[in-house]
Length: 457
Image 1 (spheres, rainbow, N blue to C red):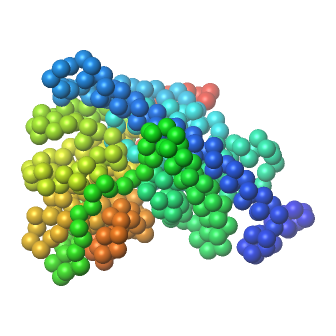
Image 2: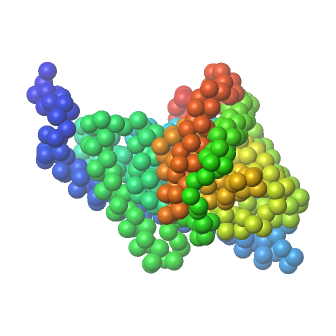
Image 3: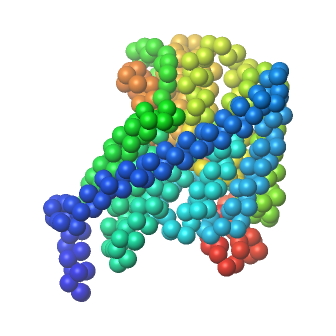
């Protein structure tokens, strides 16, 4: 065994030696430095997405129409969303990120050749109204940029160094997106299955980059006034101590979340073989269908189609604040439309599954508030936790997503949330795998042979 390999093996067996080593201290310093530009790039990406959404769906129709935005307005934009996303996936190198229909993933460093496709596909998906979140693309972009920087600085960098710093870049990219740097870091670590000695080695640079990234987000918000792009509720319903009734309702809430999550995944996975018959045309058609669903919601409920579109991150605080203004019928309609649009988006677009699941869970919780003995705060917490567990299949992160979002009241409702998450997670794993039993492979003519990878898209 060469000396370098023997040294690397001995360090891997002794994490304390790794932490004391000079290369690891250099990696910590580099992680802190990389956290600044990567978080700034992530902030700029989110700001651009928000600016395009506001310009196309708020400013432009207000400038054209005097009687309010017509219900049909999102239809052509969603068709364009599908067209641009389909073209990007079809012709740019790589798969433009993993398909969200297979759940949330945070794998190894993103190859630099795939970064343009990931950025453009996510920008088209998120800016033009498809129902997915920004967390998965940001994680891929942050990790890819960090890995690219390491390779530019040292072409023969050890794989472990690339992995650690790529993880730090991913941490920095979503440092405040979920409301807390720690929660974003926890999401990445749980989905990647990092544990044992590796946890300490990877988490320390990541948390350092994430903390610096959070400061950058706050600083850029103070400088630009564009926002912190952090998930937070502006008004939280008062929590009450757990009761027998609310604890009892946690079981059916968990079951409901699991069944709804299964239905959403079934829609997404069942449509994937159709998507692969003609990536561009079918994705444009799915975008058109999402636009029609949003139009139908506005026509029926007389509420804005924007509640159906996007990730739901920005609409969630207003939904919770105005919970009393929604009738049960409108809540059921909103959940059904968001669920269907979410399932269609999973099948062909690029983005993350976290925020739409949380939004549907909040709608489920608000509707469940009418049940005997139920209170609004635990109902919302259980709904968000159950839907997150069903879609992400990450029980610890799902519990934190629900409780941290509710702030100090989240501590009080934790017992009910834990039960709902546990039930949803168990039932989800007991249900049959939705959709085709084998992932559909793209036809030979789908990728451009010179540049496309052959993986599942």
